[in-house]
Image (cartoon, rainbow, N blue to C red; front, side, top):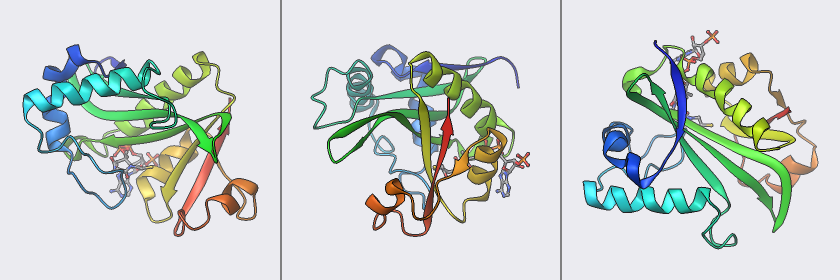
Amino acid sequence: MSKLKLKKVTEKLSDQIYGLFQEIPRFEETQDENVANGLSRDEFRKYCCILEMASKNILISYVISPMTYYILFDGETPVGWFLLKTEKLRNEVLHSGHIGYTISPKKRNMGYGTAGLKLLIQEAKKKGYKQVTVTTDDTNTPSIKMLKTCGFKKFPKNSKIQKITKAHYEGMSQYYLNL
Ligand SMILES: CC(C)(COP(=O)(O)OP(=O)(O)OC[C@H]1O[C@@H](n2cnc3c(N)ncnc32)[C@H](O)[C@@H]1OP(=O)(O)O)[C@@H](O)C(=O)NCCC(=O)NCCS
């Protein structure tokens, strides 16, 4: 592992990160759908352009929540993505960020997930979030270990956030970290 860095997804970065999005399966039980898997290079460039606009909050916020996609680079090699999204529940914007992440299957269990999450927490602090949350499957051992290492705690089962999202999060738990 050399120097790790998170870079925001931009149209300019698309050629460098195209391969990463093709390595990560389109469907994987534990992750959000990777809609970029299977796109041509040109389509992927446009996809990156949309993600860049979303990070600048140019897209209408009720269509797509303000969110920023970051790529974790080990030196020049992209190894995974991290997502930081403004939490919205019933149109109420909370002062918290929701996090998602996926490491390339070839690069897992090498410490990238934990190291990348630590960098993203620093980024969320810089953006002024007061709290970050993560939803993860109760069977996703590597993800839960990452969260514990980084100091996240599980929301109690009867907390407001768990009740509102109950149907969606069956078999999953919400974790939080106050910043
Ligand atoms: C979850 C994920 C990001 C973890 O990334 P990673 O780079 O493999 O994580 P790390 O190497 O930092 O490992 C974290 C911990 O999990 C452990 N671990 C990693 N892979 C494991 C496995 N397959 N089984 C059991 N433990 C595992 C590591 O030993 C480490 O434990 P430690 O904290 O005791 O040292 C990765 O598995 C992934 O991309 N999964 C698919 C997408 C996903 O599930 N995203 C989470 C959605 S919220």
